[in-house]
Length: 114
Picture 1 (cartoon, one colour):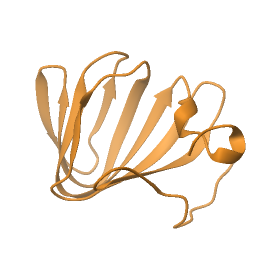
Picture 2 (cartoon, helix red, strand yellow; picture 1 turned 90 degrees about the vertical axis):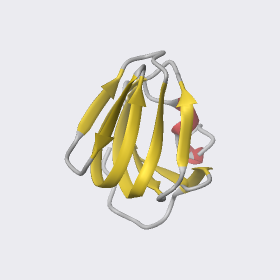
Picture 3 (cartoon, rainbow, N blue to C red; picture 1 turned 90 degrees about the horizontal axis):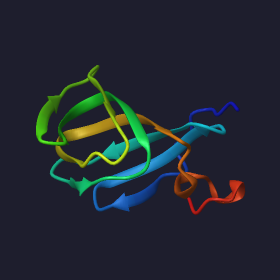
Picture 4 (cartoon, rainbow, N blue to C red; picture 1 turned 45 degrees about the horizontal axis):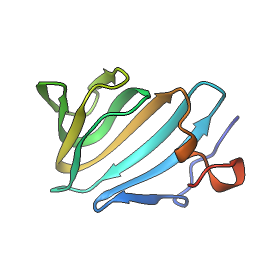
């Protein structure tokens, strides 16, 4: 699968949190998140391993009991079922890969809800 950059296809996941599925395969799915300063991604857990990279901005990422202030170039891996959340300090862009591929993030024409 190959995808070219486009400003279209973003979906509001929560207030101040927009996402767009970039590419996906049988076992992984890559998503771009656009995060607005002052927004919050509440603590949650899910059945996906989640590996991320902060492209721009600044966030505080809570993984389990630990908190990390992330700056551009920082990365993380969150194992399945680990509670995590994000506080957005500055407008930010993050790229995350989920495994297995999240069915709820698949584009509508691929059988998902996105």
